[in-house]
Image (cartoon, rainbow over the protein chains, first blue to last red):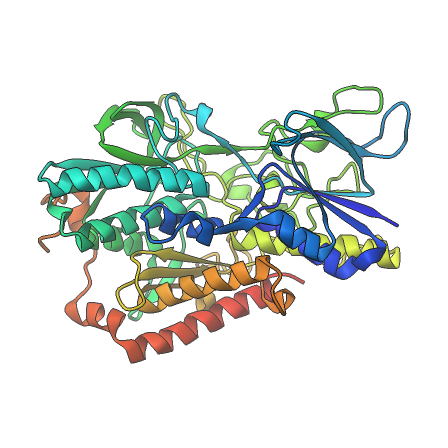
Length: 485
Length: 53
């Protein structure tokens, strides 16, 4: 009997655990360790942040689902990985600390045959001075943050209703933050909601971003076919913001936040300030901060992790210039090169480099989006990891047949821009592949045939469908495994 | 375009593309949006299906 331990129960970890148990059955153990008792469908946090969904509509308790599936669940936070075992035992193991209120602070040691590190990122709020969710700024990165954001946004709306001018700032809260799509979505929804309440004349919304051009989204932008032209998605993003009455500040790295004020540096080296009454700023991401410890207690961090805390996998980490970036640098199996029984799908893996061109201000500050791995890539990489591990365990063949490179995989990003079955709207964007492949697609880096940028009601329906479909899937309702990632 | 309260003439925002009334109409025109719903879903399914092996 083999034991597979999955760290994290987000999109990637939950997907991996679900498929592992389905494929391995009762003969093998699947153990999930996650600091939260809930699964969250993070893309719908945007709707919690504007009061259109309740927190419990985007999350559910994991223990019931795992009990039904026969997965062992520990509400705990992984502290260290011991891939060589210890001086007493050869068997690799992890140490976790319980966050479950009944056992809070207690440590548990769990042995594994295969380890899936799917912790996702650590939301690195401390990476920007004063970027404190719920105090100086708000966040929609978790459902509880989104609830808090909505409470504070209502106060701003009420003041605007009373005739007071209000300034709202939404965007990236660090010079190298990623996940622009979520913040962009939130900005559009806040603007939509202000318009619905007829208070838009008293609300000034500004989009602040570290992107060189709008619509970069950490993917170096994209091109889409529209009305007989192939246009950069920058035009689409600018047009949407303009239409929603949102101004923008681009090429900006926020380095400090005070109550009601952000400080940012731009690529031209200028340092500026922007006042706000409400700000929702996305922090930078780092790895979860798990330690890697050798057999005799020595530090083996370099074997498992890069300095940013993300896990080393089958990527080409050789430093190179932007012009030399290749899709072949990107991992396909998410297997650690030193330990063949450790995998890191989802946001936990260390990307080989950014997708967008790294930009540096004249003061030497890097201001550009790092590579996104959220949503569809997280689910897909979680599934291929599960398929590979299940195959090794069941067939004994260590060849990793299942592969999913971001240089081959596409992604769909449905950016909600208003809520309501007949009033809602969304910008639907698809890119294929996520990482531009300039050898295969020399004109635009991507397959234009499968890259779209559409605005309209249909996008909102797609977003709603995805919400209910993925909640259905995550809860393990009938035929869940037929639904794609 | 009364809504663009913070968009000033000659600012960068001023040069953004703007949708015509016909485009705005089509975004809400149910039969067209049902067709778009189908197209978007088909493209997403195709992307997912070919994204991993």
